[in-house]
Length: 426
Image (tube, rainbow, N blue to C red):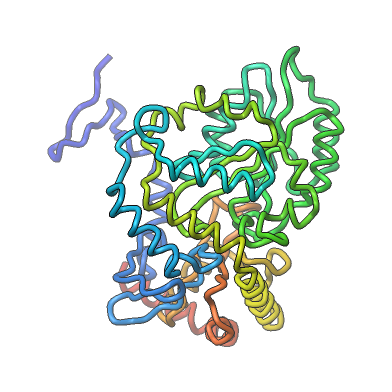
């Protein structure tokens, strides 16, 4: 059997004539189409980020409406001062894992404060939200356990099941009744347990889970409930402890995960548990044990943001007011929105090319939103996804609405112009 051969430029090609990258040819074709429309939405660069709501590309100021900076704390004086002070005291990084040399007193203090805020005896901090779910889910689930996940679960939850290597069962999105049926008929191996994993606020459509109903179903069957509140922590609830708090079931959540990269204005993640035994997982979670711990500046910025969440309820009031304003305005224009008002507002478009064209046009007009397309979206949807911030003003939202109004009124002309541009660059 002949092995790979090298082409003139050094690329290795199999005997079939295909390179190791050939499997991505369909993706490359999709990317090439999008690039011809203007800016590549998945590889764009801001020349400057000036505030929680403003960026700059070239000499153009852009309204940031797709950053997940829900409480607008990335530029808050307290978070910036805390991060700078941490660098002055501890340097720029830990250069070690939590179980080697990478645990500082600030890591432990943040864990205690997050645990206290959530009313849990245990909380573990990780380097990112993604790593949080990988580590905790794979650490919790053993070979005899079964994981039940929502059909619209985030990629990190799906990857957590893969790392766990256990049987995985999907149930219909936000459907406690379907979960009830699947738990009833799924045979759990002897000595095993069921772990149900849902999210609080789903990041693509912006729809909210009935966590209270999932609690009742999961515990009825003796299952553990794991809730990822990455997009809802800090935003919902009387004290900002998320949708579980708002629905009155925070004390019944077995495992509660979140991220620093949304409301906590930093980089990192955490998982808290009402089970004190969760602390033992520090000795078995590979993504926790074998990666460097979060930098002191990230930890201290998150600590300052946590303090703001607990003491500044006006941040939650403002983001909800701006979300309601934006949702109502888009609805009045006749746009199809994927869920009721929340900090995530998804505008459904007919197809991927239309969405990419409109995304480019909005950027030209000074508004940055997210382009979300399959396979990363539910129902193979093509979306213009907006994330509202507490730092947005009423005037900011009116400016965003004015661009969408122009898009609605002149959509055919905009698409025609984009098509001409794409043909000219072919």
